[in-house]
Amino acid sequence: MKNQIFDWSRFVATLRKEVVENWRMMLFSILGIYGILALLMIIGNLIFGADRTMPAYIMRYTIVYMVFTYASVIFASLAFSGIKDKAKRVEYLSLPSSTFEKFMANFLIYVIGFIVVFPICAQLADLTRIAILWPWSGGADVEGPINFLPTFHEFAANINYPGGGKWLEATFWIAVIATPALYFLGSVVWPKLSFLKTFAAVYILEIVMIVVPMVIISIFWNLKDMALWFSQHVQPGSLMTAITCLSVVQLVVCLALSWWLWKRKDVVSLKWWL
Image (cartoon, rainbow, N blue to C red):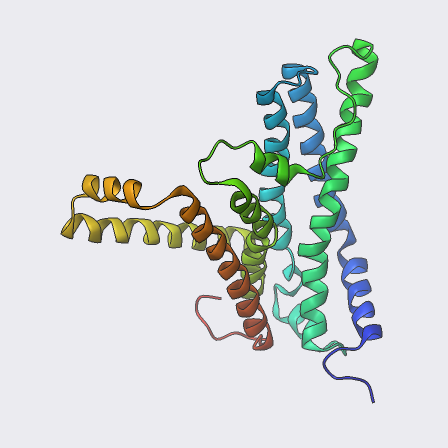
């Protein structure tokens, strides 16, 4: 008797089904990311040339990091886009694979898979920059291939933030999964228009978390005095440690909530907010 929670053959079949049915959407998304990266790299080369000074050096990695940040959450939002309506939910939820296998297949493709594919897009975009600009200039002001694999290390290492150091880089690496995990959770909750709904929910939550504490502080304390106390007693290194720990908490909570909600996914939801 096969394992009812996880069976490798069923898991592979679930992965194959997801890729075969949604390969066009995945391909167009990846091509779009490649096109944006290639365009930005060509424009950047025309502006900075083969400049190897620190500002140009940081700018190259900053652009790639920012594109990855936005593209990863958009891609993660597509995870459960195939169950937008009742008929598709019935078909998908009644597949012979287990709930865990469906969950892991989507997480592997839309979160982990994207993390693997993105550096390839970046390197191909960089080669495209060279292929387009080299014939026009004869190689002048066209830098050779750039290795974008150490993007997170280079980006963090060159940010002039006191007390940042390894904690800052650790935060960036954790955010590689933590941020897409948040939008993966949004895809479980809202398969339809997932990115827009999750973005709105996160934006509202951030406003509440910032505005409400500031209102409370302004009632009982002077904001200027509070800011002065904070700058004097909270060290940058301690702040970065706290931010890194919060990123870990975000990752764990998002994955746990995603799994908990996915296990309770119904064909027809009676929840007004879904």
